[in-house]
Image (cartoon, rainbow, N blue to C red; front, side, top):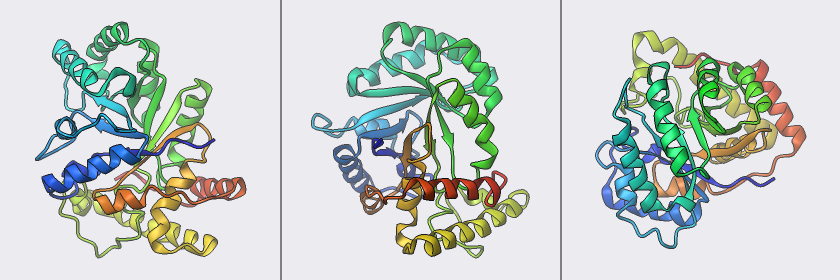
Length: 299
């Protein structure tokens, strides 16, 4: 089965570096014309909120549908009516028929009561839109699943984190809950661009250099070198094709409905439209390597 090409917009949020507004609009316009799915959060954007940027782009001829994530920075007992009002306004702009799913972004036990109220009211108004949540926590998923109809889970899934999530993936498969896989490159560490000498100053990755995180980061960057060498040797792959190869592999993993590709420039998201063929034997061997050889602690 061929999956829809899906693009996540976190790379354009400014968390990985300052974005130029005109170049940002150009890249998002390109994405709307070439990707089937766009993964957006109401909280993405430091200098420019990306939902608001999209509202300043002509989307009438866009081919994209939207994964719409809500509630990232909300806290316990947040104003549910305010979030519902914002959600209804955005759904009206993008078009209800263009919404692939609504996802709770950063759900938590403290927000469960408020999230339940949001779910009930939005579900009653838009019963046709699937609901999901973003989490790598099996207990948190089970807590939410008991209270509402969770149909999709967006999970950080890459060669470092796959092994730790096998039991969670099994639960989701048992529950017939679809998986949206994100963070395939682990914030770029698997892109082949970085090593132990790399210095990160952006919001997302500067924490890697903190004393408490440096050991875990060094293990991930060393493991990244092994993963990349495996791909280069096994598939005669050039370094520039590593990201597309990884996206292509994860699209073949059972129960993964969508792989959220990344990028922070027009050139990157243009390159990431490609797919690299890989047979089932290659996928199975890659999965076995993730299960046994490449696992790392999250950093």
